[in-house]
Image 1 (tube, rainbow, N blue to C red):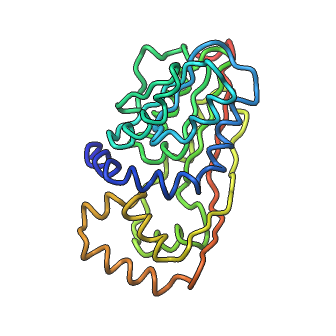
Image 2: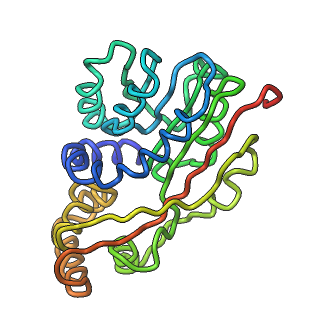
Length: 256
């Protein structure tokens, strides 16, 4: 399954970078600001599930000279991220599974930042604990992810209703129970504007989280889904305000 998801994101990478990265920028700013707005200990900043690395510009601006390492499973995403990182000598991008970090990062990092990657992983709670374990004392964790129901109406809600198969999100309930130093756990909402419903649907399927659905079910299924989506969607420009969950934690000297 992991390989299938990685291949889907390989195909979606360029479209994701063009369509979603600008629209998700406010949440990226929230996540990065939670680590750059406070003093950090020495050590690198890790960005698991970095995708095309939209966090990079703000990180290098606010943390000049700091080692920054992005990690992503998708080779297509990594290619774009490495191109963005090429002019920054202290920045590198690794192709690999960010769900369990390599032991070399344990207790070594000044910060871990991740935006919209956690909910895609097979074991989100385990991944979050792994990321927190990478922090040095005083290190900061800032993770933004989509909850199971980010909005009551809007394109995300309509898509979920049409698919009619909500994923198991019970992992969200006790997500921070084993996490020490939780400073913030809140919903953060920002507006997203789509030119129209057709553009929104096509981006979601070709360049977004439903790309695996296209590969799995095939074009005939997707065309039927698209027709019903457009039938029920509003005409013209579509603005919605989904809410993401933002968790910020700080590792103190007594943290395990």
